[in-house]
Length: 187
Image (cartoon, rainbow, N blue to C red; front, side, top):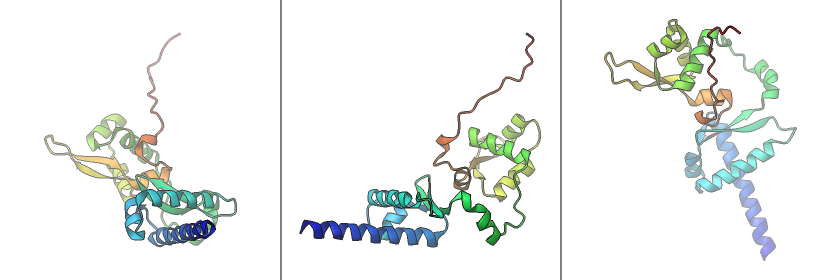
């Protein structure tokens, strides 16, 4: 009888893995753990365990997918080492690397969020309008309300796409910020 129960539990777990994998594949975009639990009809804790099993399955050398997790969301993605092959199929029209100005602006927003354009401009020493527009267009930053000050300037913060793109589970995983003293010191 005990063997039967173990076989049943194994088959049940395998079926749930298949269901969750199918839902994640069909969604394409990240799915909240709580939404997966609701869709499948099981607890969030059990979803977490099954996601962990899926992650282990995908770690096999011959697998082309892996599980990406961030901000209580999960997504199936292709392994980075196969990107060249995927790009041949999915032509990224007009997708170019971010400019130096956009990277500077994104770094400032990531570490100082929420932050206004004026604060960004002060840190950079130049206007950041175009860089901000590019980052919004790429979905790496978003508007996050308005500052309660004259003119009610827009506050900016990073998005889940930013986390996913850079491989962070949450904003707390950003590397420690090292501030440089650029003052010239004579020896």
